[in-house]
Length: 127
Image (cartoon, rainbow, N blue to C red; front, side, top):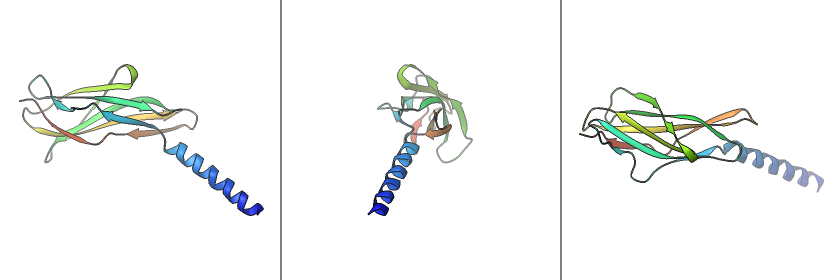
């Protein structure tokens, strides 16, 4: 019986630490974004990044390239209050782009970091 309780205790500890190691935060798009911007060749995007308990946002980037292939470009996300992020990128007018947003979260207690992304998206650059 003692062996069963020890194994149960070890299993509980493993699960507790495994679930803590997987928690970093969430990153989501604002509904309707990304979309063509107001100026020719631009695409705008926005969303929210929310760190889990014990984690903090360190920064982020947006990576984009023309659908069907082309040069990949990376730029820094702009962060505002409450974890709101946004970007305004430039491309070829009328061309559709693949877009990936990445936000880095860090945990100072465990000295770890993790990059979290919402679902990849596509959007046309304004004509």
